[in-house]
Length: 378
Image 1: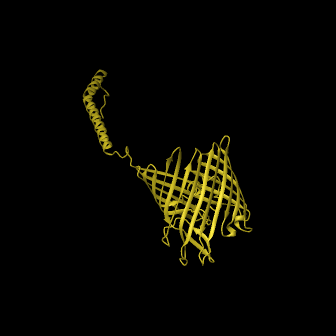
Image 2: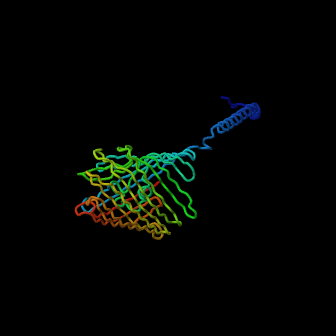
Image 3: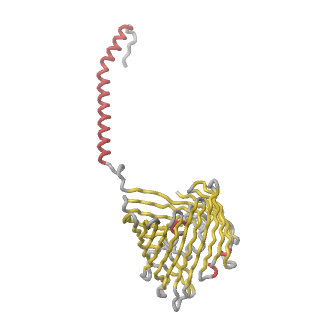
């Protein structure tokens, strides 16, 4: 370490000035070297960025959506409980304007606390043109509107599905096969369509009669006979849609003891929205033909629903009437459902509802219920 202690002031000043003059070329050269390093780094970054163009021209897009819900139900003949904890993530992976993979998982907590996971649907969607998409895989049934458009908890305006539109009802739940769907202009109107071919449903037999139609997108087809179905919708004026649906094919009993039985579904639905008022309704009839050794049956259900958002728009009132008839008296049900909702946001909703049920005395379909739910769509 250098020191100037004991040196006269005049001499000290000369030494300091001399040292600065001697070090100035060194500092200047270091600055020039550092400047050159920065310029070299900037040049390298530009070269790498010009070669790696994926960040500017992405060919794939990944999107996560879905919903979650927690529900509470208190029935007349059972203790109230928080009976639904549901998480349903929906994945979208799209490659350019050509292909998209779409899939929904349904993760729920069972009665004993176990986790149950199901693949609600998984499809590969090939965009053929502006008016047609080819869909392959397991897809929600396009028959009617409730299953494919309204069943997610944050979209459904009541905490429950209309009787007959769930598992074991008149409405098909899902299918596995090929589907082509899209929309197109029709003069001054618009239309939409969905046509599909899929594995046929299976039948659960009980005592020589059909107990239940199992139409839930199975990957096996016992009899090899495919079902064909679809839906055709028309939007004659803004805010109004009317549609017709159909399915035809064969259904085989799970034991494969009986021959396949004819299976047919017809349906109609409408939806109309005017300002804060929304009206919708749906009708479906599923029929399984009789055999000499097996009694067939007919499942029929319909509902109408009205909802209205009150000022300032956070509160919403809902009323729905449903009539479900099946070949089994203990499944028949007429239901009035009244609900009041509060929308914290367009995708965050809290619901409180009361169901007045009229079914066979002593059966669950005859129990009135109070339901509460909070749901979040993302």
